[in-house]
Length: 192
Image (cartoon, rainbow, N blue to C red; front, top):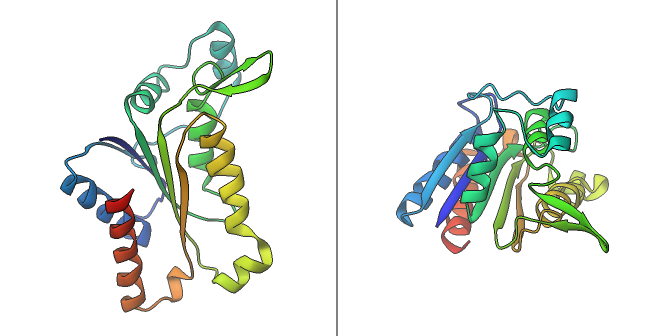
């Protein structure tokens, strides 16, 4: 199994960091080859600019995007770990998607419409929030992210299996509740 883990949280002591450690440990147990992308540590430039568009029109990409696309091509599974802020993923992650999952790499247009080009891959989005489940049911936050990010990015790009696991009320959860959340993640990675 070849896995790219994309991690997007600026605090190395966050609960998202604990999730990332559990994911890495479980993947290690499965003897998976893992390429870990800490977008903040990489100082990833999330801004899609005019030069990026010019390169895409020429059939190429910016120098910092080339290795990212190579790693996505290499992987059979992509796991994304991030918080939910203002009912969406962090801007640095959205910018990664904008710059890496480009036309000609992730999708193309045919006579019948858009067609994903990253077929046969799996995607798993692991998110956290401060809001509780009742608030989510009122706002539809998780459903929105599942539709826009999981299906709208990975599904649109041709990925086969696309899943989303969300953990609620992380800042107010007890230590035991957080341990249970991490156990759920362990089990999910074992089965995924």
